[in-house]
Image (cartoon, rainbow, N blue to C red; front, side, top):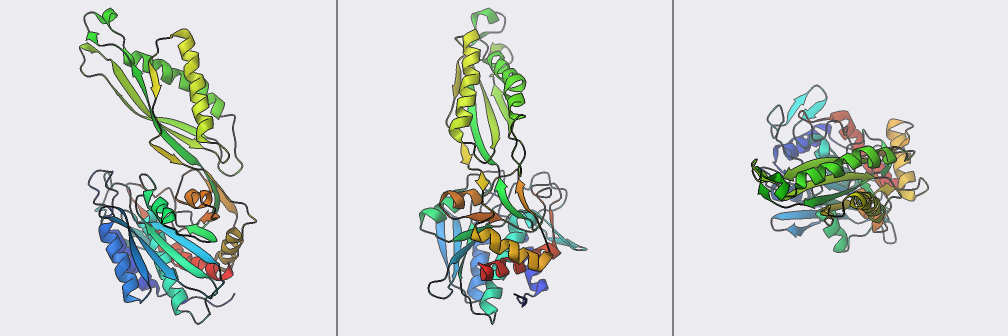
Length: 387
């Protein structure tokens, strides 16, 4: 396929700037208004270009936008998906919602994660509609809510009946084709103790001390075991104790302590497996102290690992399109999770590909390479034609 799809780079960059200027921080983070305003903008773009769309409520005031461009009867359907919410803007070094173009970069919150990819997908759909080439396959663009917190947007889209034969998910990959990613399991563990006055600590049971023993066991036994596991594309599994709360006041023996854990899972690992590992670790502590008072709560978040076979049609189509646009490239894995695994679980083989580097996502100085945004439009459009 030698014909290029017509895209006006300056119009594309203006769309990206408009998206960045809209505060769409996930409301589960400080100051986040959610996706309503950016969803309105996406709707306006497709309304102006006479491309059909529908608005799908995920939470009150937080919708998905589902766009459908029909191909020939009997053709396949390719899903393009990008999330509209962003991480918090706290800690950024410049005004997060003033899109700034310097040299060949666009700066601002969400420029990399993942408004660059969203803008590229929007313009890829327009380019396909405007193309003189007959559209053999249908394309469905899902601009989704809540990826940065609980993946409820993509889940709502799938629950509502969104279907396809393959999916391309926009996350910052430097335009590499990602076929494997880690999953994540987040949950809370509590230790129970007994309150007492700090002048007589022997009358109480210190829940923080109990938690300290668990954390030490994690450091000395659990983490070394993880180091022995390896996946060819995504490396080793990891565990991070990211939050700890305990005690009420300094002159009281604390009767409760809690930690929150983030466990990144390799393809092939499951929640049940991780749960058993921790139950075994806690059982060892109970052998030494039957009154450990340790309780594991149900997961706050579970995102599945992704592993898509190179033989899947969507991988081959994206690889071919990428080769035409950028030259030879390798299939890679990434350590972060995304909406892609949700499509795979639903029986829709998926890959991750988008402009920008994950190193700039959520960063104090977030930016995206504009050449990559242009390249993404071409790759998305060509992949749909190749599929």
